[in-house]
Image: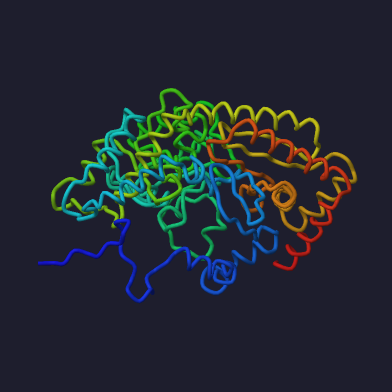
Length: 477
């Protein structure tokens, strides 16, 4: 007969008798100050180097919602949301409670040979937002959701080739990398799968490839993360019709755009009649806590992949559908419905976009504001005045994208707002804040952005920083 584990006075595990038990708070107190040195020594050494170079090497002590705080109590506005993971912001109370509850339940999780209720309940809830789809596969990340869709599309159609759009980003594992539209991510990782790019929005190019008869699917982001480019009006529906005509599938990559980001639950729903065969989601579904992804698909696709009991594990994930991830996903969807998160993304996004768009005529360095909901791209372009044009040319000659970096840095350093350049060699800033931002956050961002643009159109210190970036770009060639 086994002996039950010792418990402490609070019902949790009792501390080790020698006082050497694991103590997370103590560990962080003793070693937390080494964070950048530890990364430099043991992880990707270029990350701390990059952060030091651009002055992003901050030490954030805590976070809640759409804000961080440093050790001095200064608050920072998060317009990045962990690359879109923090849809509900950080430490949402509903998600926190769900995770405490599922841990306290001591479920018999991941036995691999039973059917727990939480995966079925989360699948049911997700599918309620996509009534034309029938089944779900749960994985751990966006790239895994894409890998699942690519595998299922190939097996279901019996074809080898997948089409993707130029400048697309679908992940960095080998299959997902094969449909990545940026060569910079692919360099040195060949051979990849025999997939083919087509220009975003080009129906003639799509039709030409489909006529070859070997295309399994087209995978597309309804709004591309790199550069924040929307599919043209009518493109998704027309592409769907072409694909069906040639017995190929439409895969919607909603890893970043899904779960309310663009003001609809899924971004493809902005275009009436679009019903993808497979939909990939991740990021916000996690609540910012537990990695989780989902690939939603039609019944016939799943039944073809899992065609017999011999194939029951032909595609699986060791940590897929774990109880913590499922609880987080259910809590996220509940909070989204209760708090009107999709509606907030639409109305707050419209407000932010309209106020930024009003600045385009005011600043010659500002060329475009685009996007939908709380996924907004701010693009900079060649100015008309001679003085600014010479400075712009200096930056472009050294490396395209430096001006956008010049804007991102003072937004953080002077105004404590975290943003990102939307991709390598792009003069675009992408705003993907937590979907809980409000009008006060919009006011704060627009005021800060206006101040930075005023400085950029003057002879301020911003251009001295630009010269530093030029020197670093030349040195890194």
